[in-house]
Image (cartoon, rainbow, N blue to C red):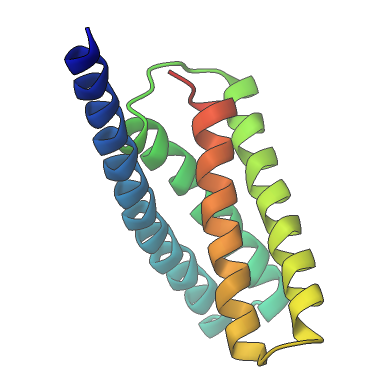
Length: 135
């Protein structure tokens, strides 16, 4: 029984690590996608602010779909699930923002950005796994 417990625990840990790796790959893809839209719209004369909003919206939408399908292999289709995902992104952004503001007063701003980015990535992954795409 003990051996089975450790085997199941090891498999679960490997799955979480794989999900986190995939989550970060999806993040790279949707970031490139979003910035492509931002720069394309700016090139054709749209304001940077509107271009940014549109690019981030489409990047976040792509993130939802890719994470749903590839990271968490979730089959549920509901507006409620999508809304939860965007709420997770908003909460994670707020955690990022407040972490950044706190750290800017005490450490190098580049290090503050890096740490805040880690807070965003970890919090969005954990919240998405536990509340949006729970097993």
